[in-house]
Image 1: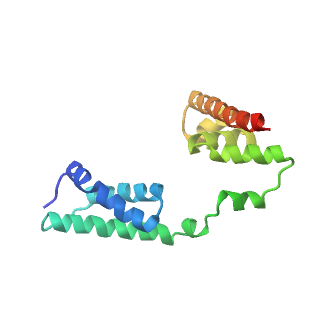
Image 2 (image 1 turned 120 degrees about the vertical axis):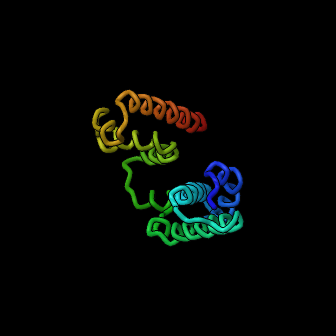
Image 3 (image 1 turned 120 degrees about the horizontal axis):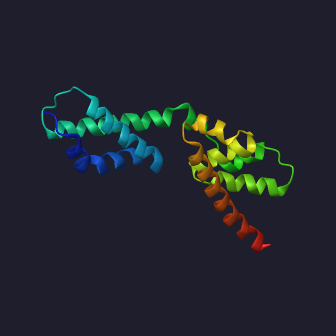
Length: 159
């Protein structure tokens, strides 16, 4: 017995997420576990005895994947941003504040800003690195600048 993936998603997505979150204590990691678990169900050739067997299999796979994340090198060695920033040297307090604001940007904008301003890559080079169009890189840079301008404006107005 094997149920269609969409039916599994509808019925068990929340249960898988809850099991993963209870171990990972992180929404992003739990979402990754849900996705990986559902993908593994889709790819498995196992014939299940009944729906309860499917549910138990899904939860066991999710728990194992969540535990793997907890045991991973990356998870054990990640450092809070504040601690990481203590290891860096900045020329001025303003450059430290700017770096902190850049790190608060969503990842797709943060990556483009980092590559453009900190690593001195051109728009074309960034588009090749990120495997996206040059116009997309320009849009992301523009949006990131707008976000930074807005967040830094608040800091300047406070002073």
